[in-house]
Length: 326
Ligand SMILES: Cc1cc2nc3c(=O)[nH]c(=O)nc-3n(C[C@H](O)[C@H](O)[C@H](O)COP(=O)(O)O)c2cc1C
Image 1: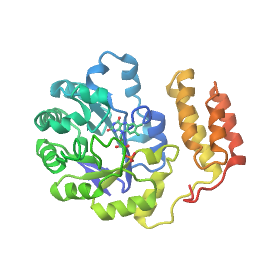
Image 2: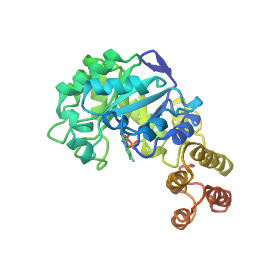
Image 3: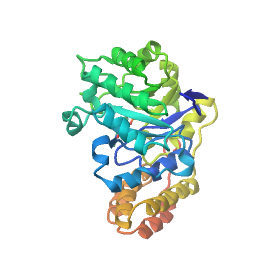
Image 4: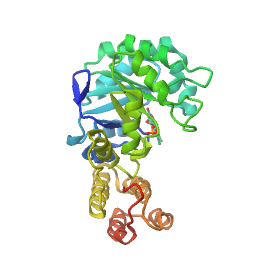
């Protein structure tokens, strides 16, 4: 067990925020499969007040997914705190995005652009920490580019400004997702601050998690891409950390999760949107099935959730264990 602020967390990995992915259905599925906590897609503090649909979606928090974090992005301290206060009451943490590399976000001086603006970043953290009742966490990268790896100064600044924990993706902004995450840098940050540090980047299975925890000494981990179509990774990570045999779902267990995912999509989104979202997740779930490429082509033609559900039932014939057992 470990904790952020006064919230106790299970050992293992949290679900990393992913725009377009970590909506309520997926967060629910990951939490059910052992994610220590979950994080919403990043939400713009500025845009939210003009987008009631987004607002309604945000308020959706499934009963089992607590603790969950609301991730916000922006560059206006008071407005960010206002927004988190208004919409974040049900969330255990408010996470501030200081790592998004997307050009349109960075051009607006938000996301990873804040790595180059320590003073403003500090004011955002301090304002949110002062005004919000729940712990404020910061999700950061290790710098802007290879010549500006200011992660130690930035991490200390975030701590001194009131951050309750840091989630560190071990890449620079310039790297986007290229190369490999620098876990040495994450280890240095862990040694440099007193607040909990979550390490993030390139964890694909339980053994990676064990190795990275041992190497870096971090308090917790965050997993993003490794959970796509593979929410069981959270159980496998908890098992690896506890020295247990790794959970390996059989087809019946996978089927149950895929069907639950379909049901949740339908509960949350209008029919067409639910199908489009579920197609994307099905394409990820198909990793490791025989003839996955052909199966994906079929999925992308499907127009109703009933079709997708019938397809899930057909999948047993294509089921084959991956070498890693997932
Ligand atoms: C599709 C996608 C969307 C993402 N959206 C966000 C986001 O909204 N907020 C954020 O802080 N990071 C976002 N990230 C970054 C991830 O949270 C994570 O830091 C990164 O993918 C590295 O972890 P991984 O190797 O486990 O995937 C996103 C990543 C992906 C692949």
